[in-house]
Length: 53
Length: 315
Image (cartoon, rainbow over all chains, first blue to last red; front, side, top):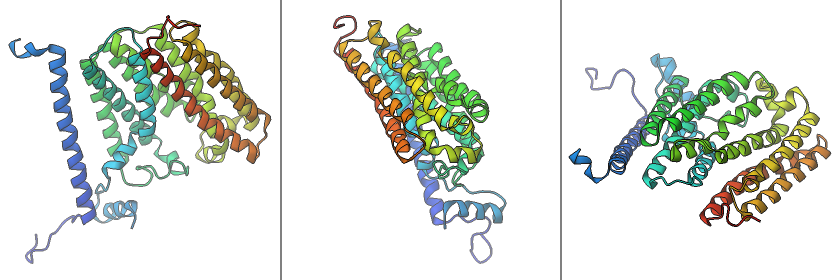
């Protein structure tokens, strides 16, 4: 911000902000899906006794 | 204002580019239509195995194969951005349109490739992961970087990359490679030339402008029509071979005979027609029928397997 409260440097347009937000949401969903997938695959491969190993 | 001009303006004034890529652009980078064919053929390879794979592991393996195919597609688009830009069919792809920078596509592709191979190795086995790695390598390095711009036989040899998914699916389920998935490999391998050469018959001027030595550009339309016929004549019996060797039932056998005959009939029609509007219409018809051919054959193979046909309802 400069002395007058205006943003300096690279200022994103509304469209750029919207697309960046959508990309961030997609990455978050993909990571969440991977966590779920790894969890389920672990249970399937090791069975319900996974915690006692 | 288009996306590309926005990116370029941002690069010009600020000294670096600000990504305007949408989520859809990254999905497009993975060639979803090719991916759907890969997933379907890999699914068939996985389902027709004699053994049993837990559905969750099967789903995870298919997901890895799909992401691996997407990685290969992204790396293909990264390397081919220059030729994509001069062809109308590909000029709107994310990189030539300026929505994704080449470096972003490269990083995306490499990340997906490493991730999909590693996860497939963990959820399935090392053989399936090695085959996926080899397929990505073959498509990106051997086909895209080597054959595509060097020889009119580019799609003949490069077609092997698209033919591997059933073998990977089979290997994921069994940890081995059998004759049956090799037959599925051969079906896709011999299907690829008539499929792509039919397309190239009416896209030849664009390929020539892009410097891609597709068969019609190098050897002419007449030779391409002859080669389409020859490969269709080889494809038809290869398509029937799973039934002839007892891996599928009568339903598949009858379907493969009819579908193979249709491919040969259309190829004969193309060979008889010259380089005119009627010939182009026939080429477009063969292109569409060839997609149907592969889909129907693999779908019926799956249905046949579900019906418990192998070895029991042979004619």
